[in-house]
Image (tube, rainbow, N blue to C red; front, side, top):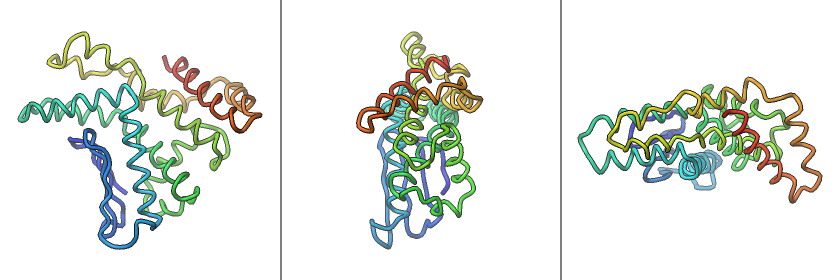
Length: 229
């Protein structure tokens, strides 16, 4: 798989390009095109879920909203190169956060945790590992997926819209995100390590499988946002 952050969005293509290609555009959402084979084929399922995760992470987070606004402005005011430049920069600042979650979740949801589908791509194996190592739980568990999701969302929910509202979209500063509010920088903080007892406390919230994982997820999101603030 490869990815391109060129406007108007994020593009995803599988290594089996002759069979399956898909993309996620910031303003349009995901699309999968299958030339041959079945929609039930494993690579097709993984590609589909992968792109839907990109869409969800974009549409449910403040950093995603900033990219959406930038993309819409680029369409509304064609020929203004600054919007394309701004969008490329924003996409680059969240690429690892986006790709690590989309890769981990698509393998978990669509391939039953089978990483062999990524064997042809060192890049995507690296992104899977990046997500997996963020949370020290067994990979193929509901709690692990929920925790990885919440970490990614916390990274994408910095106060990045405040400056846009304050100065307006015509000011170049509206699109300049401080380092600690960039998703990939925030994700790097998680990798440096949360307090030693953080994850053990989260694990202790899960005696009830029906309720505990969601309580744990909320705790990861809340504590994560506090940790990277």
